[in-house]
Amino acid sequence: MEGYNNKPEMLFVLRMNAEGNDVFIEEYELSEFPKLEEWFNKPKGIFDYNAIFEEMKLVGQCLGAERIVNYDRRKFVLELELKDMKQSLKDYTESVLKVEKALENIGVEDIRHNKSMEKIDLCSFSDTFYIYDKPFLKLEYRLGHRFRTDSFIEGYDIPCWKIQFMHQGGLSVYNRNDLLKSDKTFDEWMQVIFQFPEDADLKKKKICELIHTIYGFEIQITDILYDLASKCFVLKEEVEQNMLKDIKPERAVEPDEIAKYTTLDTLVAVLQSGKMRMNSIVSMNDKTEIGFLEEYIRNYKEDFDEECDKYLFADKEFITSFTTRIDDLDMWRLYGDNARGVCMVFERINKDSDELFNISYIAEKSDVLEKIAKLQDALKNNSIRFRMNLLKKYQHFLKLSDYSSESECRLMVNSKKTDGWFINRDNGILTPYIEKKLVREVEEDNIYPFRLSGIILGPASREQTANMMQILYMAAQCQYSLFVKQSKITSYR
Image (cartoon, rainbow, N blue to C red; front, side):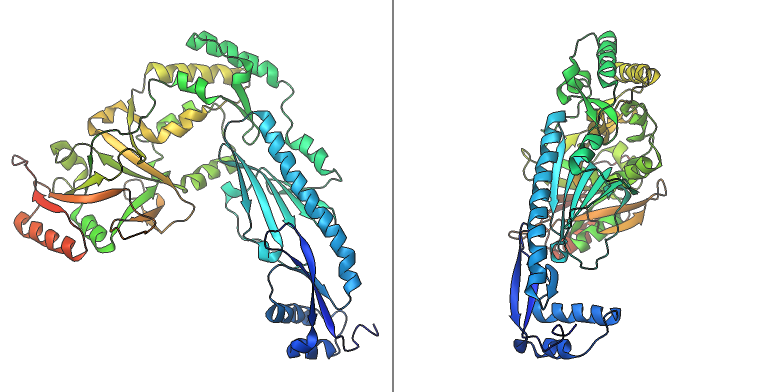
C-alpha cells in the first residue's frame, strides 16, 4: 500500500457524459480541495466500509457527484476500465438497434420506444419497448461500482422482460420479477424473447376461417399479428375497423356548447380552486359503463398480475362526461342533485381539434356483439388466445343503449401523475384524479380545453334569486366571465 497513501497530488475521476454515450477521465489537483487532500492523507483501514462511504460522499461534494463511475489516485487503474466501458456502451447501443429491428419485423402496429435518462447521474439509463401500451422489454445499462437503490415500480410498469447490461460485459435477465440464470449472449436471449408459438401459422389460418364464416369476408394471414407482450393474437386495425364499423365512436363535431350537471357544493369548489377534476376510469369499471365489454374484448382469463395491471393502467387514464342536453328535465333529475344543483355550461374553444368524443350506444344483444361473442367462443374452443384490440380502445366511449337518452360525450386524457384521491360514493372505489385549470393566463400549461361560459340553477334549487346573484359575484371575484340564470323549467315537482 506504500505509495497509495503517500500524499498524492492528483485524483483521477472516471465520469460518464450527460448524453450517456461516452466515458472519460478527469484530473483534479488535490491541493485545490483541502478537505479531500486532508482525507487522503489520513490513514484508513482497507476494509473500513464506513470510511469508504464517507470518502464517496466527500468526493461527490467536492468534485460533483453527477455521473461518477469510479475514481482513483492511480490513473492507469481507470485507464484499464475505460476501454472496457467504451466497448460496453457501444454494445448497448447496438443492442437497442437490434430490438428496434426485431420489433419492426414482427409487424405489430402499436409499438412505442421510451428512452429514460432519469438515473443518468447514477450512471444508469434505460430503453423500454411497449407493445400495445404494455411494457414488453426493458434494456437497462448500469455503469461502474456506484451503490444505488431502484425506485418502486408499479405492477403495470414491470416489463415482461428486462435485461441489465453491466460494464464488465455480463447480463442480468428477468422475466417479470424472476431473475433467470443463464450464460446466454444477448443475441441468444433475443431468440428466446422473440420466439413465436410453433403452431402460430396454423392458428392464424383458423382465425381466417372463422372470420370468413361469421363475418362473410376474407382476410389474409398477414392481417393477423401476434402480441408477444400478452401472448395472444390480434388483428390489424383496418380489419377490426371493418368488424366494428357500426359502433365506432366519432369525434363530437357539434355542438358548440356542452353541459355538466352537478351539485351546488361542487360548483363552489370548482370556482374557488379554478380547476376542473378528471377522474380515473377505474371508477367506470362496472356493468353500466365499460365492464359489460370485458367478455368481448378477450377470450382468455388474465392471470393475477395482468388483472392487477388492469387497475394500475386505468389509473393513468382520466375522463370527464358531458351532455349536449342543456337545462333538460331528465338530466336535472339524474345528475343535478334532483334538480337542486346546477348545470355548468362549457364553450368548446377549439372545436375542430379537441378530443371530445360522442358516446356510441349499443344494444346488449346487438348483431355486432353477438358476432364478436361467437368468434371469441370459437377461438377459445380451439385454444387460441385472442384480443379485440380496437374494441379495447373504443370501450371508454361505448355504452348500453339503455342510456342513449343522455346524449353523452366524453373527454379522456392520459397522465402518469395524479393530483389527489377520493372515494367514489357510487361504487366505493378509491379513485385518483387530475386537475385542469379553468382560469386562462398567457402561455400557461395544463389548461382545460373548454371555457366555463355559464351556470344554470336547477328548477328545484332553493333561494334562486339570492344564489344566482351570489354565484355571479363569486365568479367575478374568481376571474370568471360567465352568465348565471335560472332554469327555464317551471313545472318541476
